[in-house]
Image 1 (cartoon, rainbow over the protein chains, first blue to last red):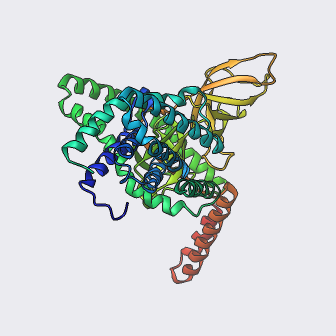
Image 2 (tube, rainbow over the protein chains, first blue to last red):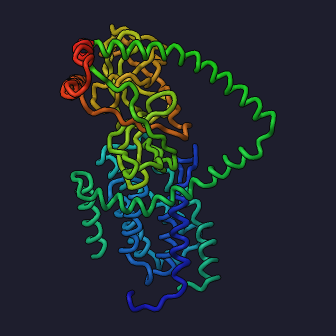
Image 3 (tube, helix red, strand yellow):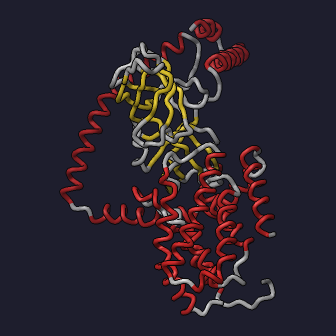
Length: 161
Length: 303
């Protein structure tokens, strides 16, 4: 991956920056269903450019997210690494699927990630009181086709590879 | 393989972060780099407020002005009363020979972000380590206590609100001094009073003030008003709920309180020592002064 020639990497970083911004933007009552922006964007780039996107980078971004959210250092890092790993393992199959089927697979992946999140939150002493913590996974899966279309357009437009 | 390494690394980090303080500086430095995201995310709201202020029409402004004037008048009336009380308090304290600070030092902070996790009640404010903020510092708004600082970064800090389900605060019923513990339940409009005896004298409408027993919050600040008291003979304790007096999910400006960490006894002792020293200095200077000074000194000492 190191010697690989890459182009227009800034587009990837830009989308990640926007993702981070979106993940802290105030949302009022819709807070409960905040999509997992970073996970969505990372999944896209992992799926499209698996040779450019390593687990280490996902882990670092997760660490950044931990600092941003004030959660235990390593919590989101672990979760983002897991998501990236799953998407990376599935990327060949995912690319063959139509968009809605990708959404279904990602729903399962994100759901797993949220369950792990629940487990980690419980360990650190603030357990979410309801099953609502699974809502972000659903919202993210529903958003996937749009995210995919937008990011795909971007990567075509700027010729990222 | 790499997944394994990174997972183990994450778990180790989590344990270290939860148990030890070694990662705190690293965290606060990273926070310095990353908090601009909160600033940027908050920008639209900031701009919106500015815009509405610029283009709000004249009659609205007039009405608001009128309202503020009325409020100022009311507050001034109360202040007049307060002035005499303050003076009285100072005189009584002088009698007791303790020079307690009446006003705690206060710093105004502005909200710049709300925790994205809907199940925790934490906010981010724009004052940090460089402004002297410390972990555990009490935070209030115009109407009552909001919470306490739990994490500091160089220019920002994170505040845990009273209503977070991991937060509890020792309070007192203002009417009769009954001590209880108010814990958050994860609802911004409600606090749960734990272990209140069924026979305890507590009524709907009672004001709860901080008791200062936890050594964390200064005593006497309003915390909540009791909204519901249910006596259920099947339960060992009465179910009591209260509504925070501070507008936890609406206030944009908060006050950070720097209270004196010393106990009243220490303060009294130190004040006495300072007085003693001042007296001695005066006594030392007295021989150099002319005639009348020795006569004046004993009188001052007796006061």
